[in-house]
Length: 80
Length: 352
Image (cartoon, rainbow over all chains, first blue to last red; front, top):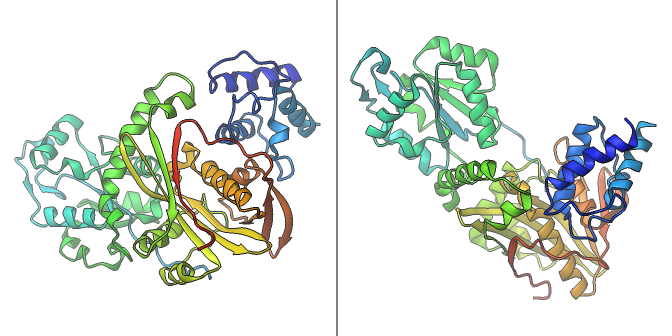
């Protein structure tokens, strides 16, 4: 799967949760207050299901999920 | 503290057939049904014991439900399955709606065919004939180890859940906006003796959202309550639909080198409410206020990965591993605010 389509799936999941979709792929979604740890958990479960993968204990770190870009990097590194 | 030997689990839900089981007579053949003479006592007693009940009947829903209402027993039944499809499918849906595994289900039906079909597909479900009714209430499997104040309210709590779920499903908009409408209040306070039966019940009913998978017996909890080194906290949640009851338990061991969360668990009924994260945020704030470090034990089971993620996303990092128990430590420098949809009332006194 290419980075653009990963990014668009992640964005559409996030916008179903947050009040606005006015954020950049590089924005820290936690610092913007768009996502709290409860939603982060749902995000993890969504990503594992959508991309048929399982994150290791080391990968389960908020830094890896802090922005659309970070998630794309994480998923691309797993696919590689 | 050791895990208890697991006998056959106690029955948590009884699924009833209607024709010639709850009542004598067959509705669709034009009979005028009469209640089975044992039924009212059985329904009431099971309900008081905190055992949930439902219906799996091959009938037309409107006719059967009208008859149930006429007998005044409709309130006893959660997620009734009344249609012409198989009873195995009905039981599976009831189990899913209640979030209870089918190994703690009993099924009562007068037809050997129905009992056999259920036993064939779901050998873990215990099946009974209505002729067993006079002895049913004395059967060990139907007698919970404890009957707490909350057991008696269990059906009502599930009925509020059903209403809440229906409304959540119909809610259009972001998930968090729905949580804002609930007016949730989370209370965290030191456990007292009267909480221990419910606390034991929670450790034994909760597997998915238990950080160590350890179950504690009443006697263990009672000892911990008196231990100067330990603090046992209970959490309860209410919202505008009613009370969820006591839904969380935390055991903290106080040590000069830091506090250690030995156990943190919560009922899966509040999984999607952010309660675990709020409980951890509270402990982080308290540890920082008292100038101490905060650790947590995590023991992986085949079902509790959600709790590992909860810790990791609440600022905990793995520190060391000993005999399969992971020791984690919390970063106390950057603690998030409580969720805006949750009103917190928390007390904890580590110094007394």
